[in-house]
Amino acid sequence: MFKEKAKEVLKGNYGEAIIAFLIPALIVGSVTMIFPRASFLTLLLFPIELGTFYFFMNLRKQNAKIDDVFVFIRERSSEYFRLVWVHIIRIVFIVLWSLLLIVPGIIKGISYAMVNYILIDEDFKLEGTEVIALSEEMMQGHKMDYFVLGLSFLGWIILSLLTAGILFLYTIPYMTATFTEFYYDVKEKYLGDTVEGTEL
Image 1 (cartoon, rainbow, N blue to C red):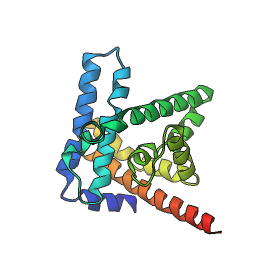
Image 2: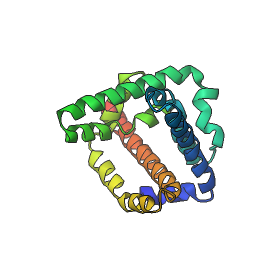
Image 3: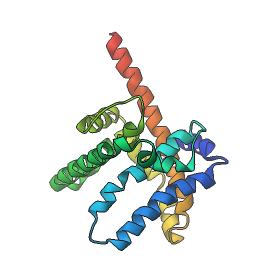
């Protein structure tokens, strides 16, 4: 279901989707090559990476633009440090859970899978750990679905590796569009449950 919707969204828009993916990848890759020991710089570039998600969320509304990638630098710079701070908190939480065992770390990573979308979504105005807590709440009952959906791309990932990464130009936009559809499905169910719970 999610893949079919993603294909519909990407139809006629694949070129723009590839560019929106490549811009942050090239920027982060270049910085990493120039400053190999300053890994913290990639944290500061997170708002640009997040711009890719903003692009794909707009793409499904048919109003995406390539410069959406820089929206948090150009138009919404006041949110810059809030985005970076949440990203750092998420990484710290995942690392701490991973210190216990690998599996808890993976489970928590999946629980936090909605963080990037929640940060962008205008329906949610949250700060710091509130964003992470909401992602965990939204993912209750959906973690296995997310995991299985991720596994369904394993063949594409292997093929992409076998083509020296070239096929990733197709695979990553396809995956991102698919998981964007997953987010909106989970959001709809969460808000529906919340409203029903409030009415009761």
